[in-house]
Structures are given as C-alpha cells and as structure tokens.
Length: 180
Image (cartoon, rainbow, N blue to C red; front, top):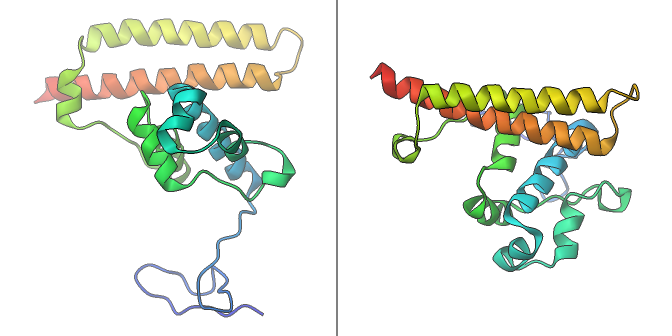
C-alpha cells in the first residue's frame, strides 16, 4: 500500500508513491529515459576521458562504467549528481545537464561572459554548422547502407547531432550579441 503525500510547493498528490518512512520514491520505469541518460553519462565520461574522470570524481573506472552500462544488473544505478557536477566542470559540454534539460523541453544557453570568450561570429558559425551537417549526413548515409542502424552507428550519429547542437547554441549567442 502506498500513501499519497499532500500536495505542496508544486508536488502533485498521488503521483509519487511514499515509502514507509514518508519519503517520496521515484521508480525508474521509463526505460527510454534511463537509456537516454545513460548514453549522455557515457558521453560525459568519454569527453573527460575515463582515466581522468576516475581520478577527478574519486570513483573507479569500473564504477563509472556501471553508471552507463546497459546490463540489467545495473538498471537502477545512475551517476550521482556530485559526480555529474565534477565531470561537467572538466568537460567541454554539460552532456547530462543538456540531456535533463532536453527531457523537460528546456533549452540551455551560455552566459554573456562565456559567449564573449568565444572567437568568431555568425559567419564562422554558419560554416561550422554546414560542415557538421555534412558530417552528420555522411555518417547517416554510411549507417543506412545495409538498411539498419547499428548501436555503434547510432552512437556516431548522436555524437554528430550533439556537435550540431553546440554549434547552434554558439550561433544563437552570436546572434543575440549582434542584436544588442
């Protein structure tokens, strides 16, 4: 039997089951969401480098691997938020934060100080965007030659898609700077 906690500060009554000590539990039943977060956790670790990530967050390489493993034994294991924060501070892109924002339909953007530090402008962004799009289309063309997209091919397509997303964010920021 689960008890519903009264609605307060945005909580919706009855949505989350409450355990016997009164703490809301969120069960990870959405496999698509879990897989999406695992793929972005893996991208984050690979962005930093597995060796550097292990040292940076004080976890073993095996433990980091378990955070993004598709093995059913690790289905309930996710990367702790302190590990995400430490790795994203060292990464070139906040992979997990971007994934969480994407799941909520939120768009991320950089602050003015970060955008001022970037070189180039809209013209260089357009060139970078067209190059990245060409790379994505090349990967896609290569991936569908046999009529299906394998796991490794999907990962390469995801990498190119994320690269396009980064260029689009830079382009948005350059356009906002020019509009001032």
